[in-house]
Image (cartoon, rainbow, N blue to C red; front, side):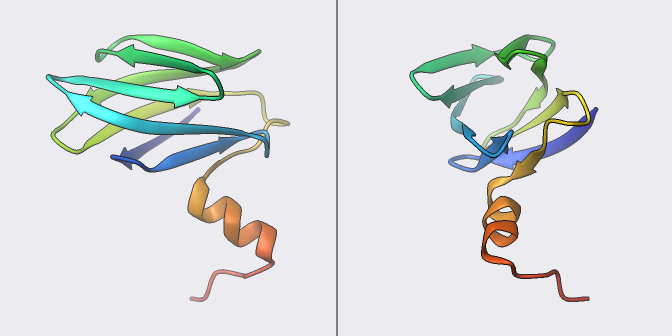
Length: 94
């Protein structure tokens, strides 16, 4: 399980191909979109974004949402900015 926060318009990349974006946060709900699909989640709600990958909304604030992601170890899940760095070959500087 991975737990992280995403601000409005930030994304996660699942399995190097699926871009899941936090497109709106309103009234303690978060709107996620990926491909031609979208879902509005309240805290405690879950959605399967691809087989064996489930997003759970833990909380939604004014401009961000905290999610936990259940995915098998062989399916990579990265913040979009990290995924882009991986693709470009840039290593994290300490």
